[in-house]
Length: 376
Image 1 (cartoon, rainbow, N blue to C red):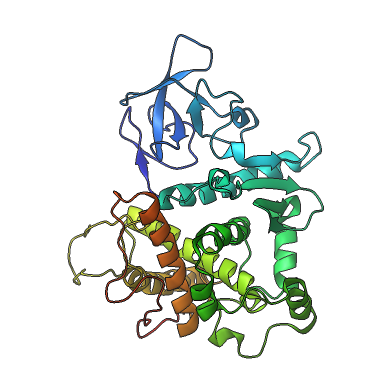
Image 2 (image 1 turned 120 degrees about the vertical axis):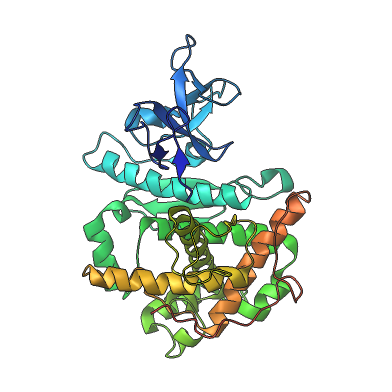
C-alpha cells in the first residue's frame, strides 16, 4: 500500500483517511488515479467536489460514505452513487440490527484493500463481456464463507475478533483475518479468469494437481481426517492440501499478502534488505512497482528477510509472528506460477504496458527458490 501526500498542504496521508489532520482538507480515494486526493467543494450540484491540483470531472463520495463505510470517490454522474468497489456488493447485512453496522464497516475496509490489490495488478472485476462472471460480494449473517459463480460470501461473524479467534483455534490455523478470507475467496474467482478461461489447466495440474478430483468429497475427507502428515513439504498451509482448488486459493492469498506487504514496506522505507542495497548505503534505493515490475525471484529475495525482521519485532512486543508460515520449495514454485499467471494476463490485456516477468524460463514454469525460504 502506497502512502500519499495531501495535494493541498503536502502532509502525509493514508488510504483510509477522509480528512487531512494538518490542513483539514477533505480527502477521498480516487480509483481511477489509484490515489488519495484532496478535495474542494463545487458550487453545484450538492455534494460535488473538484480534485485539488488535478483536472477532471466533478466527483462525489460513494453513497456508502453516509454510513462511514467508504471514502472512495465516483463521478457525479454515476447513476446509483456507489464507487467501483461498493458497486460490487450484492448483499449487505441489515444495518438496523445492533452490531451489523460496525461489522460491515470492518468488512468494507478489508474489501477495499482487496479491490485496491486487484486494480494495481490490472485484473478485471467483470468478465461477463467475454462470457465470464462478475465479481460480487454477499455479506451475510449465519452464512458459510465461500465462492460460487463469481459471488464471494462472507459470514458477518468473521468481523467479530473474538469469534474469529475462536475459529482460528478450532481449526488449528496460525493466521486468520478478514482480508485473508477475501483474498482467498477471490482466488477462486481468478482461477476461472486466469486458468480455466485461458487454457492453462494442463500447466496448473502439473504443479497443483488435478482439480477434477471430487471437490465435495475432498473437503469432507479433509475435515474428517485432517491434512496428510507431509502437507508442510508441499503447501503454504494445511488447508491448501485439501484440494487443488484450495491449494491455488491459499497460494493466491499468500501471493497477495506478499506483494501488498512489500509494497507497504517499500513505501515506509522499512525493508531490512533488498537487491542491490549495500550495507550502510543511503535510503532510498530504487523503488519498483511491485505489482507490475518486480520479478518473482526479486520479490522473494525481499520478502524473506522482511518477514524474519517483522516476526522478531512482533515477538519482541509479545505477539504472535507477523507471518507464521514456512514456504517449502514446492509452494515456492506454486507462488511463482501465480505470479506469472497474473503477469501474463496483464500483458495480454494491455500489450503496451511494461510488465516484468522472470528471465531464464518459459511462462508458468517453476523456478528454484533462494537458499532459505523459511521466514522464521
